Amino acid sequence: MNPFDQENVANRTDPGAFADEQIAPARLASAIRDRLAASASELNGFWFQVRGNRTDYARELQEHLNGNAVVVLVVRGAPFDNVNAVLDDFVVLLEENQEACEKHLAGGAATDRRAVVLLARNTLQLPQISSPVRLPAWFPRLGGRTPSVIIEDLTWRAETPLNTAEAAIDELCQLLFELEGVLLDRLHSVCEQKKAETASFWDQVRREGEGPSFDDFLDDVRRTRREVRNPSSYRPSVKAGSSLVARIWGKTQATPPDGLGRLGKALARALALPDSADTSWHRSIVAVLFRPSYRPPSDQQAFATSLLVTIGATCQMITAAAHADAYPSYPVPLIRSMSFDLRQGLAGARRALIALDRYTG
Image 1: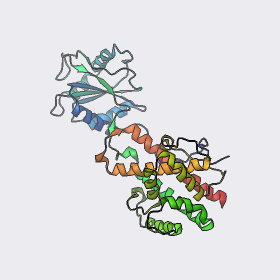
Image 2: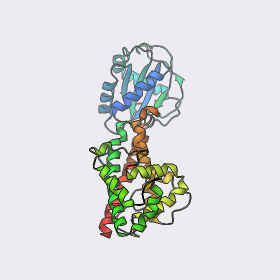
Image 3: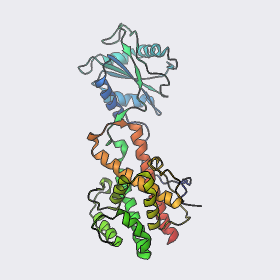
Image 4: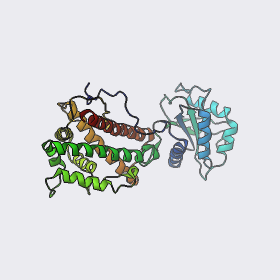
């Protein structure tokens, strides 16, 4: 069995205690407040899929939205499966929850905008088009009127800055730090036994003015790492270039995808990757998206190239999160999935390299 075959993904190590995939009520409440503040509509509908207990989720979400003119309702009877009857179903749901609507929509912040949040088992499988709806006479502030309403599905759209807790930046930092340690051990071992095998990789990551000794660089990086007191806050600097992952990050930034094959080949040789071993690894999605246009000539090179791109993307995400105010917000599921995939890639690569030491030891 070849350890560097990307199809060999059995028995992946869980790279940390990952949060449940459901967006936390507090995060959804924040997204709803942002949308409500930017809305020009008097009445807004927000749909959200809840995979767990909707009653508990609704209770917690409503608590986070108290003080806002927002009511949280659980969709139970109304089907919401006919595009021509969506707003009829909406009114039926309001009638069924008159007491809650009157309680939460009568007051609220000093705004004319109000919102109804609908928690359902499924996503809203219908076009989201603004349409007029005749509200019941008892409806707070808008009773008997016919405002235009659009029900927006937030299941995949609730946005947050890149430094959100769902990004698990601390876990990314920790895994990056641990992977670098394993890489240093492996490179140092190969350099001691077959220095020529590491020469090409060192030539590509070495900076102008640095000496020819790869050993000295590795020793310097190790000394710098000993100063790291909190690996969960580990943040490499391309400018300083004092870490191995920073050198890799800088090189991947400056190298087009087709050029990464050469660097990957050099790294594969420097790591002395064998033809086979008892392990597996995970190719991150960024490694797939930025893969060279040609097929890598070996599984060893494919592993090394994927490792390079995954390290570079992880460093970039950590840095972007540190400057989240300079970037747009993105959907929570996207941020969570990207972080999860990078963590799988880092953890899988680390596990594969550790297994190689056992295999070749």
